[in-house]
Length: 354
Ligand code: HEM
Ligand SMILES: *[C@@H]1O[C@H](CO)[C@@H](O)[C@H](O)[C@H]1NC(C)=O
Ligand SMILES: *[C@@H]1O[C@H](CO)[C@@H](O)[C@H](O)[C@H]1NC(C)=O
Image 1 (cartoon, rainbow, N blue to C red):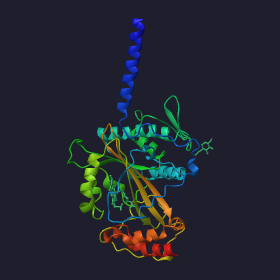
Image 2: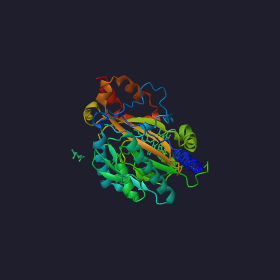
Image 3: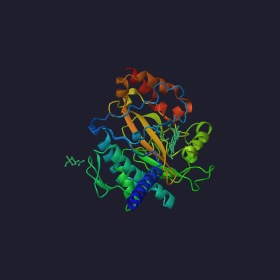
Image 4: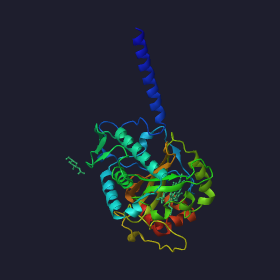
């Protein structure tokens, strides 16, 4: 009798203890992720209609972050662009690996990258179980690309990890950390990045650079962003998830832009005529959906970037033409120059009105 009581007590205590260990371990926002509906079909998922200019009052550069920590299942998306974009990413990775993929060679960065990979595979299997099937052996098969990969990073090289992330999700990513994580005054430094779809800069310029250096070309950065951004990054909690969006117009169809979308100091920008622009295949609203989380073990910050190109016709069809015209006109001069408004502004407005 006593023996049975002891055994039961030991079992109960160890299960309780184990569950405590498990809850403690998952102090990340990526935990118990809700799956998409069982009939989810990626081929019919329309892209999120991100239109940051609609109803916007102030067009100066701003933080514009929103906490979506209560719906962590919205972290990374799979939409009808999935296979096209994955294929593009694989090609870019092979063509320009030195721009696309960067991992600083130090233990802190490597452990942050591995932490991201291990969280990512858990997320994908929980969120999209019909696409990412996990076998008993711990391998995951992507049912869209038919590729199989390990769920854990421990036996993978950095390059293999970067390739696998690039060929399974549409989002680019950045990992930032400090050299001394507890130093509030130290800046976050970009230590690893996957840039399959850079929006008009050469990613290499920013490798191993602090956030303030990276934003040097951004108008009003010092006056409006620097201080708040520093505080934002220092205070980012691992239970939170923050999202922000931005937008511009580009007059070509390329997702990959290492250096053509932005006006730079001293540059003279030629105005395009409406006839100069191919509105059917060569003019897009370019939006980014940026999500920020803190990796709980390494304390690094992870930013994922999802890029959307939306044809101007689509903006007209959905009835947002007047709002986009208002947005174009409302840009302050410095930001307008940065977004090259003098090149496309009048022509795009004319087309939106037509
Ligand atoms: C809350 C955080 C952030 C805010 C509020 C922010 C804000 C901005 C703004 C306003 C711009 C100008 C383009 C636009 O209108 O959107 C910009 C550009 C840029 N940002 Fe950020 N950003 C943030 C985080 C980051 C991080 C973490 C990185 C990389 C480590 C980054 C990299 C860049 C780059 C590369 C550009 C383009 C700069 C260029 O023209 O060369 N941003 N950012
Ligand atoms: C994956 O395999 C299925 C079934 O064999 C096939 O129909 C599909 O085209 C394959 N997908 C790719 C991207 O190769
Ligand atoms: C949006 O912001 C990102 C990073 O903050 C920057 O790299 C990109 O150039 C911006 N995109 C547009 C379309 O302005």
